[in-house]
Length: 138
Image (cartoon, rainbow, N blue to C red; front, side, top):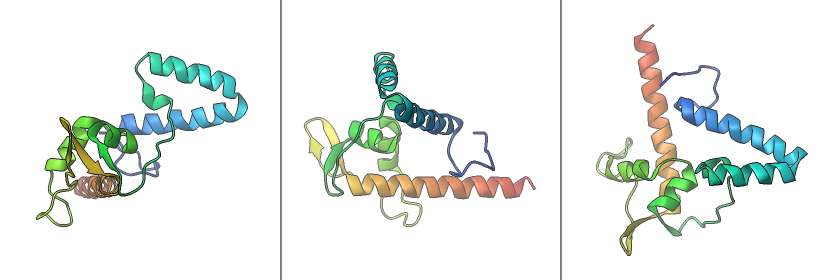
């Protein structure tokens, strides 16, 4: 992962930075031409890049959401959500970073508030590791 000291969200990967920049461009396009933005959103979805055409997710903090919904909520992959469910919490290793809630059929569910908290804790831990690496090289 290539760090960018000017980037305001330490710990973001190059892909995360690129996506945030693309979404910023999209917001400006939508303000200038909603029709063209809608056309490009449809094309992005058809190409399998639904992240480029965000839609409003409406979840309450205590809602149980599936792995796929959790991934979409915080902009990571479902594999990352499953990884968080196996990781110990960086502030308290006796508990998981992302507690599992229940099963819904074959799918695991998580509470929205826990997904958001795990995302924030993971980003903080990533940032701390990046800072530690950069101070070692100085």
